[in-house]
Image (cartoon, rainbow, N blue to C red):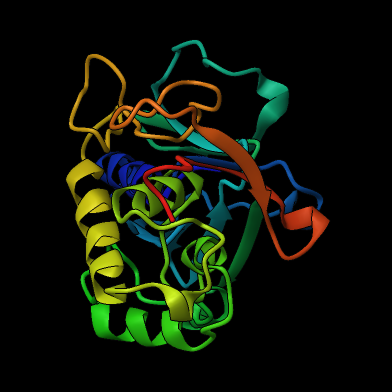
Length: 258
């Protein structure tokens, strides 16, 4: 699942070509909105809220979510798409550009005044202008018996962290992802680290938590069976989730994390 920094960059790239532009053609390839035509409407902006993308068009908001496989692409007219057309869910065109949302997990149009209906449940946005570490900490500590790896991934606690950052934050703080929140020392430092990591990566095409952009970019994520970069112990992979549908892989070092 894309992390919040991926969605932030998507919004930035889309806003760069759509901001203030008039749509010349729109194609919503989902049954609920297949007959909607927003051509002639002006795109006021495209913004990210956690992992959600919001296009503000006239008096409507196009709300999309990438989920596991989604992505937005920007093309010049006549340029071949990098993904097959059957995966396209939304196509927005201006005089100069074509933007295409592929395999989007959520596509919906809501009244612009009702933006909160799709984002109100989110915790503080790690990359938002109103980031509030103290509120995120209160959310984190609200359920002290919950596993820290689950709490960090919960968008109601803080918005923007995904599987990669969850694993990396736990490693860098020396905390097993299965440890209860209430047993984690220096919880404010975990919140601060999550914020610093995602901010450091928000404008990078290739994410890194090790500081290395030419070699191993992650300490533990995706490195099951390989030696820990700090101590050499074999990295372990497991699953965390509160239901089978929510299970996600996570990674840790049995020696460096307790």
